[in-house]
Image (cartoon, rainbow, N blue to C red; front, side, top):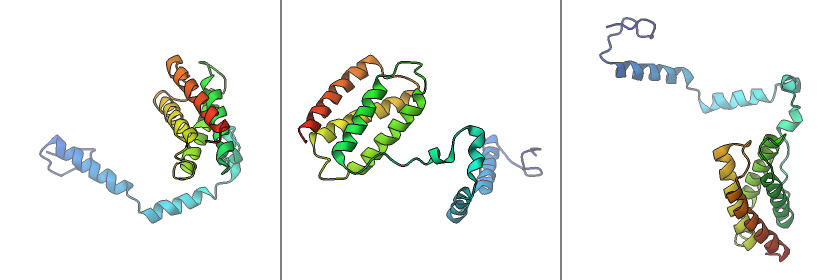
Length: 173
């Protein structure tokens, strides 16, 4: 039995399963690149001129914006908290919501990456509650996307956590 157009012309294959397995093997062989090949392709991306992004209406400098986490825990925590409060206040259809939410999500990720392993900070009351609030908000946007506002029930719980965080930050905890 020969399958014309499958790359197996003239090959005798007993079942559909064998055909599928053979196609997967061929696709894997065609797509296999070594780590060195992938890294060399990544180096080519740096050579792309900035005008290549002109069609998208996005400047190349905005694609690699520096992080907003400075290293001062109290200031960074307050900035992340303020941005999270702002994002929670959005209603459905708020213009520019998706972009602002994406920026806040990146800032939350950068904050957690910076301070999660810092032993001077990660046991504090403000950090533990802020970490919980970040997980709640990140989980919401991971599940529903950047265009869906925070529901009232979740917003109520987050507002309580925001108050606790603010109180703890004012006390220096």
